[in-house]
Length: 208
Image (cartoon, rainbow, N blue to C red; front, side, top):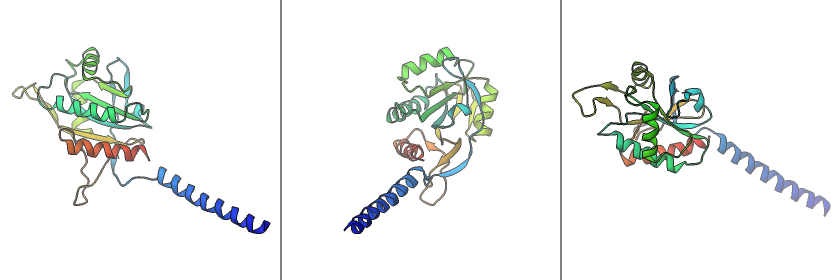
């Protein structure tokens, strides 16, 4: 009887061990999201006048957008969608947002702080970043391959992409594939479909 009991207990322990290893493996395994490459390094100033670099985001899953506070067209939509994303992961210390202005001459830390308050920003890892204009344009266009430029003929005087970049905890830009198996690179920050997609993929990266 003792041998049977011992064997029974051993079997239960073995089964539990296999289950635990499987669960742990799934918890820390890579998701199906494509790795595009490392996020470009940056060093900018946030709404609290603190220097923020890409290294400050290591260990966090974060979203990057380019915008400006006086934008009369797509930025209000992008910002509100980013607030929705913030609310989804509010209180999670492993999540963050980097909103980089393309009009730094106007968007000082003081202006950005007020802008953040007006939007209802609550997450302590959401930084509104400003700096040298040429540096930021170069970061957008050559670093992220996202268009940003000054154009006095358009409303607001600046043009930029409405896309969101998703970065994992190791500092790599990640994305899902489209229906044809091609990486989408970035997420649509203007449409509900894109916002829902990035919220889903943030969850995947947080679980890695």
